[in-house]
Image 1 (cartoon, rainbow, N blue to C red):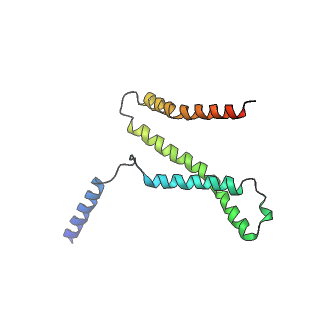
Image 2: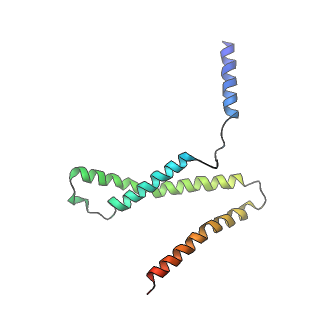
Image 3: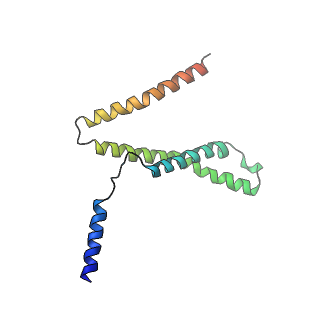
Length: 127
């Protein structure tokens, strides 16, 4: 009996040592969750939002009502972003100037897309 207890203890110890870090450079499961969130938001905006579903059959109404759940995709995006941003901050907390480096990287990542969107929307909506 002591042999099995010892071997089980060794197996548990070896599993703990091989544990993967919480954040990795590639996380396919999070990509899958992100894809589900995108699909949910697209289905919600494309098939449910703004439709008068009383014109459809019972089955079609049930399917369209199920698309209502797609609005939770936005919340899922916020949760994923919070998880990833917290992980980035935790990884960099021992480096010098970690907050300033984090915000500089965020600005350099967000501003180009924001400026392109502003330019395109201004050029399309200009009188």
